[in-house]
Image (cartoon, rainbow, N blue to C red; front, top):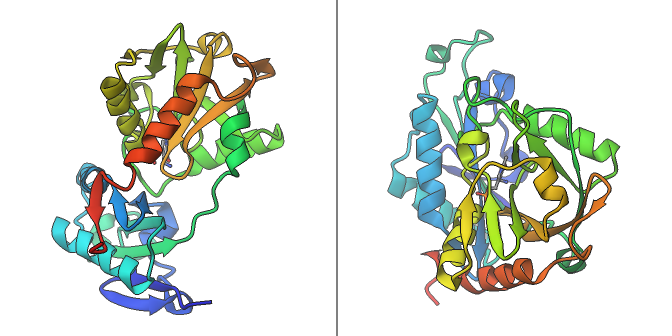
Length: 294
Ligand code: PMP
């Protein structure tokens, strides 16, 4: 197998040499941010939107990224080229960097930047037709006053605990509610419901990441003339929906066939979900930043 090259603080190193300090505050405290991005046919899908979100997350947690926006994009493009990658997944990580065992980020003089590109383990194609089984979980989404879910921080324990709960229920995905009981998102995906031809998704202020795939779906609905509303809704609205789907960089647009034992719609991917998936897959190698010339 060809060598995997990883960008680590300005160097391109092999997987074995890509190690970080045990004093890195990303490791010690989840103090840092990240992005998950897809490359389709040499196109970094929605590159600008992902970099905007990365730099916004950094600003929010007062983390100085030691690369300019253009340098970051170029480092990402070069990592892709060095790995001869046309289709795959890109993980950008910016941690607070090495410090001491104390919490104080002033002891971390320089943030660390890591870029990993890899093949993606995605759901089998049949899952896009059959849909996922999801459960709602008791663990609530981090409240925005404590750690805003709009920040794509390295602190994913909230999501991991949710994943553990859905694993225990032998489900494929989790539905996370906020402290008021409104639906927010999946463990690592945004959520949409369709009722009587209208598409609904929760506003992100309820406690959800402003997903780039979510944004792409909102844009596609507009383009296709499908009515879409950003509105709060509860589990009841999910149970009685005609269709439910999740969106995310890795999962793209994937239907949900069952939630908490209730069969959604016909019990498999519905027509609006499949139409949006089809249209989404049509734009993924167009809308973004082309790494390769042809
Ligand atoms: N919510 C959470 C908690 C996520 O981690 C992600 C990314 N995997 C998403 C939503 C979807 O965001 P995107 O479409 O930008 O991948």
